[in-house]
Image (cartoon, rainbow, N blue to C red):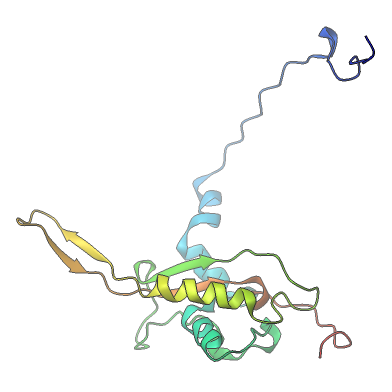
Length: 171
């Protein structure tokens, strides 16, 4: 035949049985490091990685501003772990955490013209303003009660982590 498929088609002796992956036991403590609210809160409160206040991001978008890096962001940009009235720390059921992933548009700034902010903030605003109702068990006819609005904390790498600073490339 004019086509030699021998390099493409495996021969019988080239076919290998897939080995079963080794199972590793992960303790509940280790698993909780990556899934628990308390661990997330403690890491964020240490200050190396912080969460951004969702309402602040929406305000930046509405004011037509560009998102600054962590090094240049004002203190009010960061999520406050105290309740709005400031009397105690927020509980897990009072905050929703959102993580953002997107491609950076330039090496110097991930969103120099506010494109990502416009999309993210508009969705965040809708998300934060959702009216949620909870079914009250054992009621007939069915009754619902309003669920209090949660505070929104956002992980946005540009704002949540310190960035290397290159003064000769920034305007």
